[in-house]
Image (cartoon, rainbow, N blue to C red; front, side, top):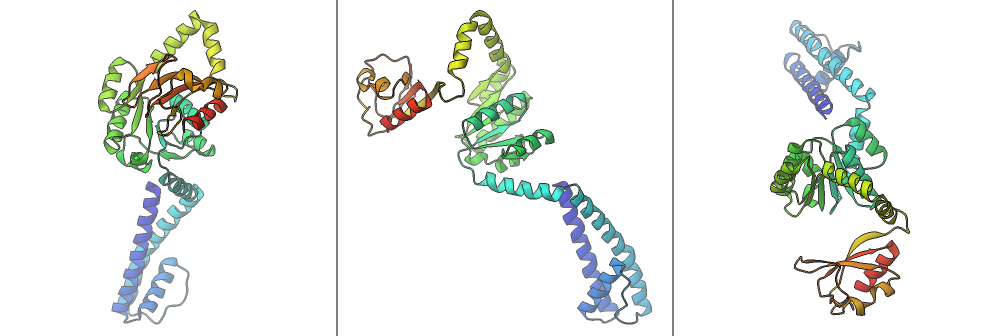
Length: 332
């Protein structure tokens, strides 16, 4: 963008030189504007065409000034414009404009700030879930890799409010602050929450101390990768069979199980029925209700079979994709 601004500035300077040159010939030689413009252009372009008419001594001195100023500006403008073309900046600019047009149409999307090791894994998961995402990243190599994969990407600083606005933070559903620096994640959380109070923010933190700061800054959840990684390693060490089973069960193929939240519609036949009477497991060929989330936010884990499903409830369900889809139809 800085290079583009330079090109625009140089073109404006060149246009100014041409207009002033034409005006000067109109005043000194009493020529028409088109004649003064023609004389100025052939002079600074050094093409060697004949003069409009014989120049007066004052006109010749003025022509020397036009050559000294105009040729320099023309040469500098052409050299910069050529470099701009050769470096592929125009193609990059057009691609950025196309990408920005695509991003501006997104609503209820997710923003990922930082596509490092942790951020990239999150991006892969969001793509598998077929979610609309926008990535903010500084590293040009990572940006190129993501753009080659067709992922909407903005090259910039996520701590800059304008960059967040370009990413559509005001219309986004959630944001992942996965920058390597805790202070940057705090700033992103604070700025994003201020621009969109309803935004659900997940932030990366290094330790418990940073967790408190991130929560105060506006993060709804804080992920501590070292803590999670350590617990995972201990679980594999002590109960490898159970961890392996869970990994297989929660895989990514069609037969793997997934955990989803299913909303119970106001007119659903499930309302006021107990879990036992609802026959959810039989009607869906195997979906399991692992929990209930009441309308007021109360979470009930491992509910009993005689617990009633109420209006406004959400069901936390474990099952295959086809089983969950069947339950969604029943709950609608």
